[in-house]
Image (cartoon, rainbow, N blue to C red; front, side, top):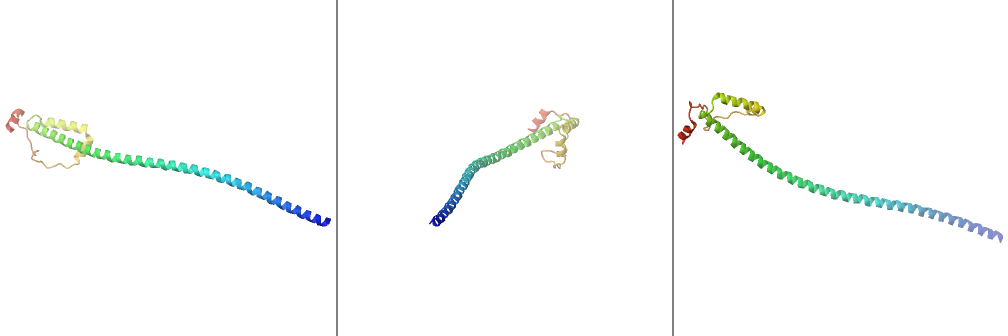
Length: 168
């Protein structure tokens, strides 16, 4: 019987060793699972942080788009204002130019300006505004109209007040 007992004891010992080995494997698997779970939890936390950052980025982008749209609307408004102001300035400049031209013609006709004075004014203008003179010289001269006769000769020592009365 002792052989049988020894055999069963050896068998039981083998089974116990196998059970211990299985238990150690299970503990090792459980430890690895714990490590994997901890890693997964860390990844989930990082994913949540990334999602929070993405949400903040989306919110910031929406704010930027809104501000950009507001800026575009403001630019269009300012462009419209600038166009209106440019038109007003050009109209005022055109009126001032026509008035100055008309006044010069009246003064010349009234004999208040002679050719030497006109030449002097032209020279001063050319010295003060050389760029404008260059740009104006590239514009073709217009044909004389009724408002600007081709040859206006000043009357000999005409009195401006008498001339005005004669025109009335």
